[in-house]
Image (cartoon, rainbow, N blue to C red; front, side, top):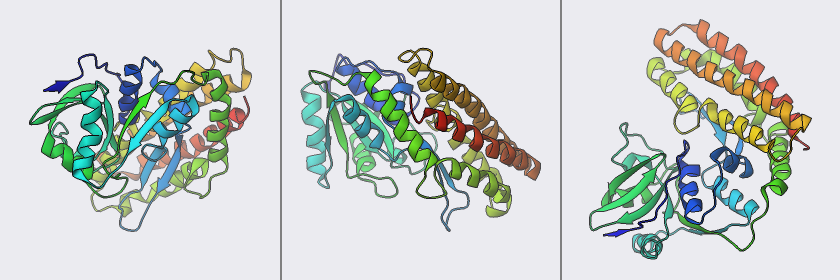
Amino acid sequence: MTIISDFRTYGGKHCETTATGCLLLHENIKISEPMMLGLSQGFGFIYWKMNFMNLPFIGGRAKPFDLTRVFCSNMNIKLDERETTSKKKAWQNLSEFIENGVPVGLQVDCYHLEHFKHSFHFAGHFISIYGYDNDYAYIYDTGKKYKVSLENLEKARFEKGPMSAKALSYTVKKKMKMTPIVEIIPKALHEVATGFLNPPLKCFGYMGIEKLGKEMLNWLKCTPNPKTDLLDQADMMENAGTGGAIFRNFYRDYLYECLDFFPGNARLSIGANLYKDAANNWTEIARLIKKTAENEEIKYLEKASEICLDTAKIEKEAMQHLLSI
C-alpha cells in the first residue's frame, strides 16, 4: 500500500476547485474556493440546446480544467498536466507522483465511481488521489474520502464522450514567488465582465440568461418526461457541485472577499450586492422549476421566466460596474 500520510483535505463544494485545492494545500497554498473560482476567470453563463436534447444544458463556469489552468497561470503556480492514450503511461503519470508523496488531480467520468448513487455519464468530473494498493485507489471527492477499484478508476479515466479528456492527470508546485492576489483581481474581474457583456453567441453571458428566460416557457412541451427532466434540471442548477445558485453563490462570496483587498471600492461593493440578489434569484428559479416538475403547471415556469429575465438585467448591471476596479 502506498499512501500519502500528510495528505490534507480541502472542504470544497465544487469538484474541480476541491481537487485542485487539495493539491494547493499540499504546497501550503491556502486560498478560498470562491477566490479560486474568481481568479480563474472561469465564471459565466451558457445556455446550450441541441436537437437531440429534451432540455438545454445550463452552465455557470468555464469548460473543464480551464479553471485550474488559468488560475495557476495567474498565480504563477507551476502546473504539470499530462494526457495520454496509453493505459500504462496513464498509470505511471499517477503512480510516480504518489510514490514521491505528491497528490494528483484526475479528470474522470463519475459514472464509474462506486460512491455515486445515481449512475450517469459526466466526464468533466475531478477528484484527487492520495494513495493506492493492489486493488483500490484512495481518493478525495468534493468533501469526502472514498476508495475506488483500480479497474473502475481506469475506466473512469478513459471514458469517451462530451467533456472527456485523455486520462488527464495533474500536479501543482509552488514557485519562489507567486503573483499577489491584489494584482490579479482587477484583471480577472475585467476579463469575466468583458466576456459576459460581449458574448460571442446569444447563448452566452447575459444574453444566454435572457434566452433561458424566454425558452423555459416551452419546457413542458419539449420533454416527454417533464417530472424527471425538470427535477434533474433544478438539481443541476442548485446542487451538482455548483455551490448553489449555478455558481452565483461562489461569485458573490468572491466579490465580497475582494473588498478585503479593495476596501471602500464603490463599484466592487455594488457588484457584490447585485450578485447577492442574483444568487437569491437563481435559487428561487431552481425552486420554481422543481415545483413545475412536481405539479406540471405552467404558472411556476412563468414566474421563473419573469425572475430569470430580471436576473439577466441584474447581472448585466453588476458586470458593468466590475469592468474596471
